[in-house]
Image (cartoon, rainbow, N blue to C red):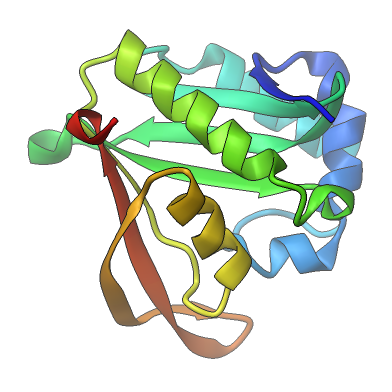
Length: 170
């Protein structure tokens, strides 16, 4: 299996809707995504990503053997954090545990560090989500600590981990 990141296409909306209509995926993401996720939701998201400022939003489809398998994005922060960006991602369940997301994370971090002035990329997975933490560790991120009682998801107060990768770490 070959994993690559590429720009979104509006024709990816149906695949995106299928992936995000899985509750197991949504349970590991921030709130705000509709459930079930429709093709129109996908069109709206992809349109927004394509229209976003290229120096602030680096959003890509994750593909496996040419088929859309997930989403990955790095989002520039503001003010004194303007050279810091947050990483977010998800992958269709059928590809979990196969190293695809680790490869996608490596690709997007290389892209962002090469094409922008971003110095630090960070991610905040839920502490219980060991597979997501492992993705980051295998991609070279360092765990900086635990953010205690940092989120409320599905009625539960949750800890999150803070991971980062610095441009100079590569």
